[in-house]
Length: 166
Image (tube, rainbow, N blue to C red; front, top):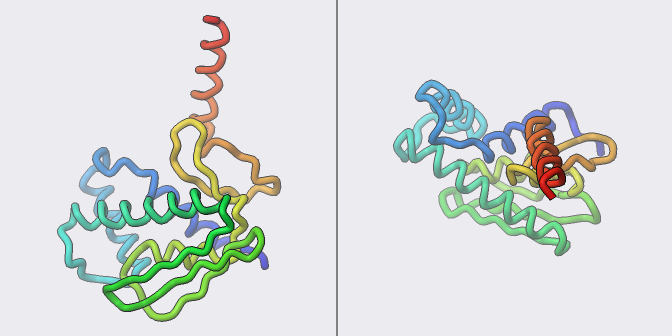
């Protein structure tokens, strides 16, 4: 199954949010991310404070991405249960592709992330060799090891300096 442009954009958004340094965001940027998350989860009122809302969503998303990255080598079967809405999401791994089985509605961003992963090959999900942030790539060979060109440049410069000093 082909992955839609909308699905690719959504997954890249999730990875960008997971890698953000929330402490460095301005008040306006925090508001922008909060509004976007609320649109994704379909929730207009949050039971948490503005600051706690972003931190909670990012922490949950980072934990799920890390769990996914660790389990990729184990032929993983992920189970996700959300006590708030009594919903369940099962990630069923079929060969090299992630499959989603889902029932119900959710207020948790991680569930929406897992749903967006439906039919995505494992080889598309990576951790940057330089900054260690997760990223997703949909290139044909999926061999990208850096999230952005700046990370690749920093890594290369460090290697050249180390080689010159040796």
